[in-house]
Amino acid sequence: MTRPLAPTINDLAQHLGVHKSTVSRAMDPARRHLISAELLQRVEVAARELGYRPNHAAASLSTGRSKTIGVLLPDITNPVFPPILRGIEDALAAEGYFALLANTDSARRDDAAHAAVERMQAQRVEGFLVATAVRDDAWLEGLRKSGVHIVLVNRTDGRGELPAVISDDMLGMRLAVDHLVGLGHARIAHLAGPAALSTGLSRHIGFEQALRAHGLQPAAVVECAAYTVDAGHAAMSTLLPLKKLRGKRPFTAVVAANDLIALGALQALREHGIAVPGEMSVVGHNDMPLLDQMNPPLSSVRIQHYEMGFRAARLLLEALRATPGSLGATVVLRPMLVLRASTAAPS
View 1 (cartoon, rainbow, N blue to C red):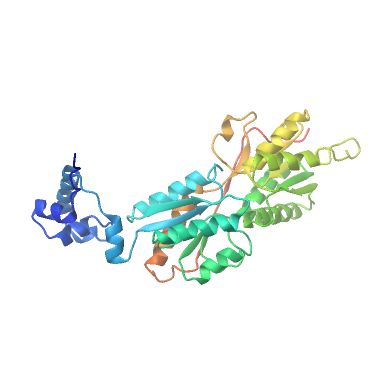
View 2 (cartoon, rainbow, N blue to C red; view 1 turned 90 degrees about the horizontal axis):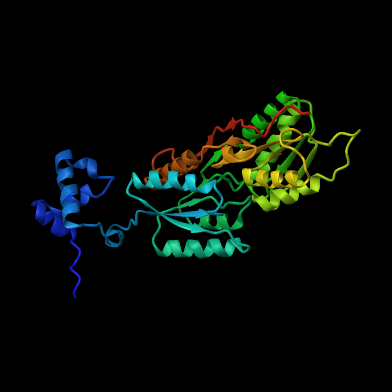
């Protein structure tokens, strides 16, 4: 049995009795404002009736524009990234663009990123949204020098040469420390993120600056190998055997660089019979979903995940249109502290 041929833009134009350029404008979000609302509605109704679908591959060949953006994420299983991706997709869809996603989490990160970029460039992507940057990233610098449009998401590469949308990580740490000091904690430890990542370094610096503003020093700092539950458990486990000072624990509160690290810390505390928040207060960072369902619910610094993705995609689209003043911008979003039951005054 022979499958019927899919209707073309010419078929749709003939059905409506209009020129094919009119249908083309109606199908292009960037140009549909050029035709009347009444005609636009007629085109949309006819497209549904005929089962018409735009041929993006043909359009790419004729216009040189694929309407596709490459998105590189480090770990799609990390709850931080789905809302960022949703923001990206919504911003792109509003302009008729599509996100082509690659997860590059690998022991051989550069190889995975190279392979993903090569595949994406073969698909004629028009630019990249990159959430995988590390500080002084030689691979990313090479990609930038190739002339492609890039916007960083959630992290920077430490060079300041690429536009980015990030959260104010140092402010986030200050909010956490101020809260704990306000409760009466003076001995506060930090489970830091990897220093090779801008978020790990910025949050570590922000933590120490916030303590100094109160005339305090860190009770302890451990750099986690990764933003994972296992890394948080391992880091917390190295701190718990620390010798008590005059019968007191060397620290009464912990600020974690992200929520997964905080979850690992809570596991280690539970294994050692240390009550939270009765004996130890814990604050996370990112405010990922379901923290309010934990026991105890975790206090955390909330970052604007969706807005971060949305704004990053808008920056890239502006760069593609060469909008004046759009290149090189860095957007810093303000976090907020969400208080739950994992923090209390020191016992």
